[in-house]
Image 1: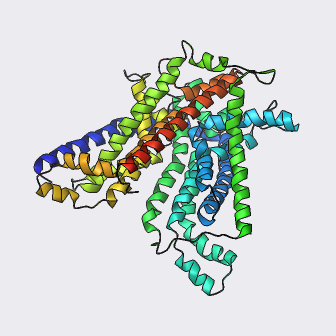
Image 2: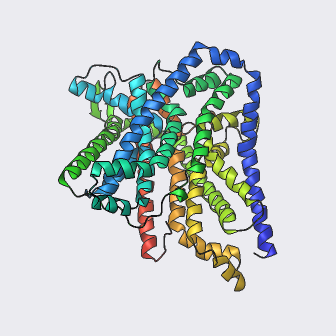
Image 3: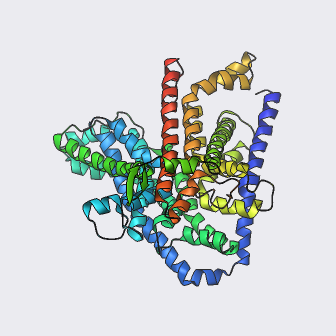
Length: 532
């Protein structure tokens, strides 16, 4: 690298580090410094805190266990059997990712509430609110993440061990216990803590369907928003931070590079019994997820559920009418610029850390990766502490910044994996020919990584559209986003409007997915390559 390029990328490295210092490190330090103002003993010994902590741990452990079991089964059905339409099943399994967490809880209310669609149709007795509703919604919310993680891990499994076991006459059950489970030991631990962190720190689900079943994130939200007790909120935020930090250190030990070398891909099972069980499982899960989606669609287009089920478009008119259309505009603008800003930052951060020898670039790597250890609700509270009296508070920019920091770790790791797979001598050849690094990035590296870049953009956009945790402490009427209106309408018993908002968010995200699928196909037809 010549001196000019060296200086340019060194400056960029420090600019990116400065961004993290301002929008990650300083806010967290300010938030944690407020703990000294709290009565920690009173907080930890209060009945409400003890009950909330117990509820959080218990519901998260149960939801995580169920979600991990279901997601592992789903991944095994898709990877280890020869059932048809696997892509259709995988698409349906990941549909919940296109909705805010509050929508999953709201969907259960629409189906199984006291006047729920299935409650009335099947004459079901019981109450969906509380523990069972929270666990059910958290399972729906976290199931796609676990499925995708297991689905990716299973692609690296080596079949040679199974061949040897078959020659020795070892049964399929014994092979699963002795080969498959040991292979999944480390990934299983990673998935479990990833899902546990996701469910433990979510406040949208218990806020929507928990009723009197209060969890720690709800306590923190109520203390900060309702009581303005920021010191107590900081204490609870620190507790919510602990599982994420544990997950971060587990991920550092259980990286995919430590997976065994795959010599031969695992052959899928074609037995009639296995196929029947796989089809049954996939169809049942798909029906459950589809019912949640259909409940939004149905209630969105009726006048008043359950009193008047006549078709109407008034619910959408009330949301998109004068005075409220700006909330949709806010969501789209924030999601778009978060996706642009996050994709650019992740790409150049990865380029600096993977394809240059700039001194101390590892600092940028560790800071970027460490963002995955900060839950959105904690980051949002940290921003509320740090930027409350600044000009950016209450603006769209602060929501773009918080979402960029919140979601950047995964796209950064995605593009880092892609750039590492490209020939490391490309820049040396370009330097010999007098071609600048920026020209190499523009004409070589970017086109070869374009599919990954598209995935990064989609990841930022979709997650920003559905998030409620990272933005809940930072919004006002001036920068309110669509996802936060779901619970507001639900609290006002305007179920139809709440359902319509969920449906709008889902349609926007599914439309984006379709557009980018078509875009990726067009890219491949033009000869661009994917390095994934």
